[in-house]
Image (cartoon, rainbow, N blue to C red; front, top):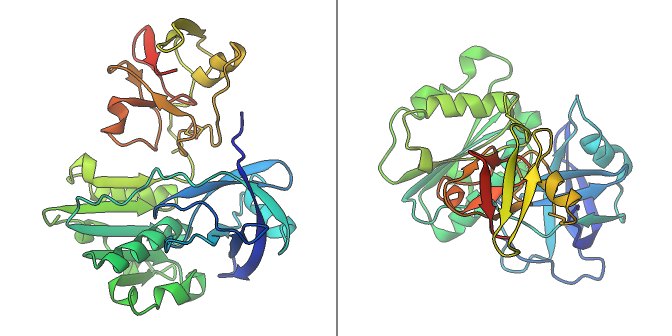
Length: 319
Ligand code: FES
């Protein structure tokens, strides 16, 4: 079951870079849209039947009158980004989900380091704006090819934000690339790290921050890593604690599929463990977590049913 809760009007489309368009989305009747915390994303249901997650690229100032997203046209587009670029026009109506946040700012941090590769800047830009308003200690480092590939340049130049922004243009020249290992070599106490970008960039940051405690490194993935385990494996039983029933999950089924076959629909969106739509409560430590959206502490009591399975023969969930 795909979650669709709102319809918005495309109020404005602007070219940010040769590959990135921004879309400003408004309530069709001009009413405020649901509020959100920086780092949140929405699902956008677009022409052609595609559905994709896009981060909200602007901090909610308290009146979320519009949402701003950035869409990069991927050379290897499976249809989603191509549809947004070629078929969506100002004035069109688009169904979207309400904002969800699986990439929040950790308020307990004394300092925040935000690392973005290319279009991965969108959630981090919103987070940087929110941190700037709070007067927090933070740094936003953007890694892009060249100046013409830098999206949302106006927002980055805002006086409140600009002193915290470092942009690294590599221009394809390896000698100009920032050394991530140097950047992350020393972690000041209380620092949290947030990273979003293409798969290779994410892995490079994770390697460079391998000595950082796991629970201070936060990542937002666009797609499951190539070596992700997926949602199938050995058979197990789902025990639904509230209903008092069990549902068998075959080896070639996901938990979501098994529940659906049993007449119980779980909302899904990405079906890759990225967006958090299918997350439910779980009991004990019985889950083999395969998602990319839950934190370690959340995994103690939640599970993403589109991809995760039982470690053993049974998984108890709060349904
Ligand atoms: S549907 Fe996106 S995490 Fe499961």
